[in-house]
Image (tube, rainbow, N blue to C red; front, side, top):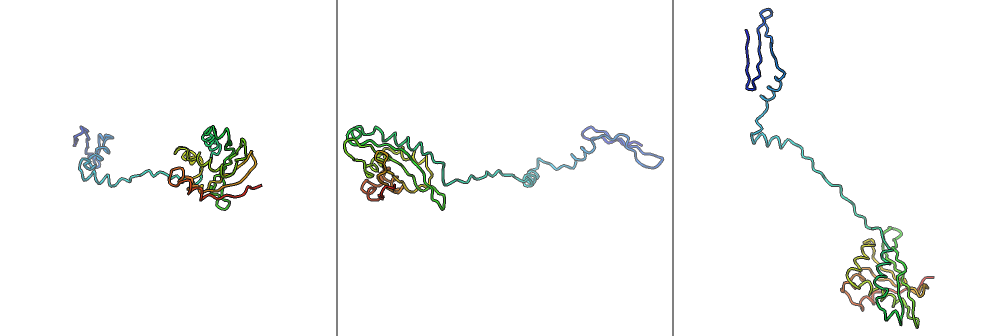
Length: 215
């Protein structure tokens, strides 16, 4: 006896009866049988309920960027500060440079607080070379530097870009022909306010602290 099974996929399987042992012999078993069984047992993917179940069973992997921890201190570029300030100071007042004095920034430094290692002070060295009489005082040097910083809004922004955001104080070290004459401290916030026009010269002058020159 031969039983022939014709599937929808035109796969033919023939089964034969063995009279000797009463068993059934698969005369032709194609290797496609597991595929047929798999297809027969598969759910209907077109069913919306099945689709929802499959989607819900998936584990979504979300890429989480690693946050970058900002540092409170940037790498200071003091050479650029010297160049930028001299670009505003030198040659800005030809009459004053002819009969009074010539000013130039010779150095800039960012000083760290020893216990915390935070950058707190921007120190600027300004040299003065008088013409006819000694008019190189720390106060006149301070005034020249303040007007340079407030020349336009770009000057302070460019200076700020070169120093850490933790700086709190501006220290102006005045020189007369490279001989130190005095030191003036002023809050960096007050310098910003003066440059932006939030406070006037009277207020800024009253807030500065003058100290004697250090040997």
